[in-house]
Image 1 (cartoon, rainbow, N blue to C red):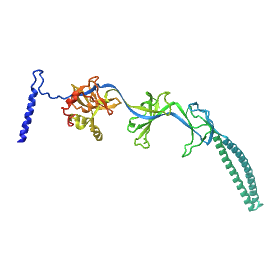
Image 2 (tube, rainbow, N blue to C red):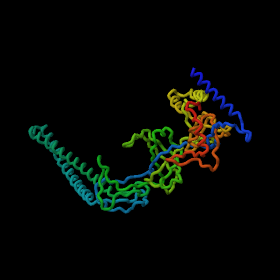
Image 3 (cartoon, helix red, strand yellow):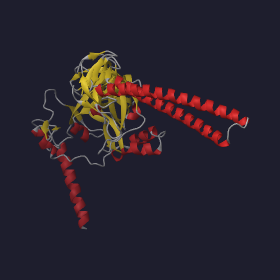
Image 4 (cartoon, rainbow, N blue to C red):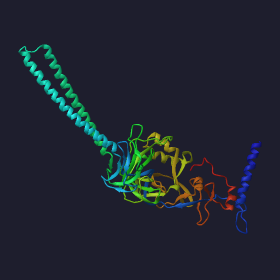
Length: 457
């Protein structure tokens, strides 16, 4: 009974409010009871543009010469002369360093004397061998006539073998000494270091009077200097594993030097490593790529750091909108007809890819008759400012691009209004811009309930 009474009271109140809304004042013909209308969301709009879109992959890198040679010593010695300085240009064959050669010259002289002595020893051994051979042949003839004894015959055979062994030993000693002399002469030649290429002394690590050492398994040895051919330069970059499948040899690139980031230097991808590396202490895998510098710009110096932008895709005359216009909506927020169209477009994709893309669906809003209308879109490539639209909008549409807070509140069919030109669009707060609202609109919104999250887009 009480329930029926309550329903009756509510119905009467509703009828009364409706009746009051139909009565108007005689003075201005306005309703006696004012019911707040839906307030429009202030938005900014833009027209799609048909223009070129270039997808870029960015990577840091270091500038180096294509041909760079490290000059090291092959012997242990002291630097006696160094007629060059860092930055000097040298031609192939020019003297760049001379090492002390006194000890090596002494070794060469000693080796030459030793070789001469061994040659004399070989001649003596050959004479002894010839005498032993003659004596043995004579004893053989005598033994045939029973003139000599068996014991004498054996002694001459032994003497012949001994002479042969001594001759062979002297020859081996001579060969060994000649090799040592040859090695000493080669070391003597290594005291004179010349440039192997035409280039510039890009780095000078040693000075005159210092002792240089040769490299070992655990010690790389002394690098006296580096000579670089500055006529051809390259950038050794490190590309993230997410982007490396897009990078191919021959693609264009722009090189931005840290010293001058306003004027890029043209480049071209030369090659990409087939195996990635993981820097110590980091979980990110990077792939090394070589960018050939297509310019002889004097600003480029070996050792500089640079940022490289590689053009991995390029579409001309593409229909584009600002990246701010593309928003993501949860599947449950969209209407059934939009979801049906989305599922139809995804039918040719693999199940895993369809599930991944279905989590958040890309849409945009266009302004039609002061209403926001949701459009399901298919995007192509994008740059830092604009994104290509393959489906979803035409050049004559008016696309809503912001502000961000308004885009977040938009739903299909919502009333929208353009932000007046010159009106303050937002206030800076904690690094984010929030849309400023007139005091009258803020007061009116207190009486208007927020849209339900269960409303279809």
